[in-house]
Image (tube, rainbow, N blue to C red):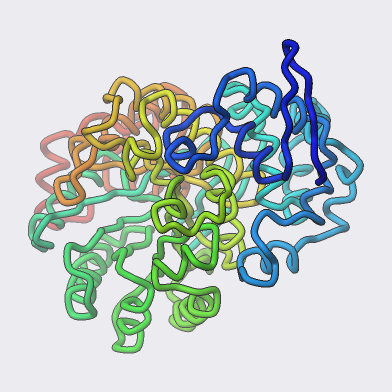
Length: 462
């Protein structure tokens, strides 16, 4: 990039490299301050954004933030770059790219064509110049559709992951929580359990429980036990009913190594899942979770700000054509996102960056109890994300995950968003809700009627 100088309010600000410029241009967040990367003053932050706005977008193709020779994520980003797709914006600066994205000429089709030509660093850079409203307006134009047994991401739809976790993996409790969620129309994205014990036997037992429930009611969705990818591969080899393979990922080779994964291992897992041919309307078989601060917490961030490192994780996800990707936005804690303002901004950034890169983005709208945030803040973020066209949200009974010990959204919260904004479940799942008698005469899902609940609990099919 070369040294850049900006004079702002009679102060001269010098940015010696691209990493420093990107970090100083980021909105304030505790993780970057912890890492010693953040702008020391708001004036310096504004100066960095001025310099970033004038930076040619193509700079990111010649000045990698993490060395190509030592990082397989960087090699993936640059080796997969589609120059032809990039051509329409290749001459723009980062600031001009923001204006282009906001223009009326840019629609879902244009963004879909552009996605293979964008790198994570490009979308992270332009996000730093956007206000929250810009992040919502631009992301709302993007449409990324994936499918397995249900189709996720269609316009006018809002899917939900049903998350019936239990601290001892009690099958009866997990089934009860799942049925509760189904009564409120949750689970069209996935019925996904975070196992308290990560081994092949425990994972297979939970997979069998979820698959039995799905087949019993002929539910057009997919199930997932969010065990480590190596556990899922071993379960597949033993004949377990694996729909989706899950893995947490990050934006550098070293951070992924900390998760016990590599690009080669993820490719092996995807091939194993595809070999089962369990999908009915599509073959997207991977599920990835990410979160700002993951690379920093592993000391594997290479001096890059946490939001840009998060966007680099999306290049990993994009390589494997996932059904679902979600950022667990406030889960890591206030050391990385201190309060509701930072959590809200991060959730909108992550959704925006993932969508521009062509990913089916969802968000776990969540926080830990030692963060400066509460459920009112989560209501605001969820409403913004729904307006931004988020593919799916995560719903937990009572908004309180009793196994992972954090706060998320409840079934009622997601249902309220569907009613308020006229968002419907995935089409295959919506048809199933109708067959089960769970929809009213307007096609909406009201609070569960006791007669329907008793029939569902008793095993009836309508």
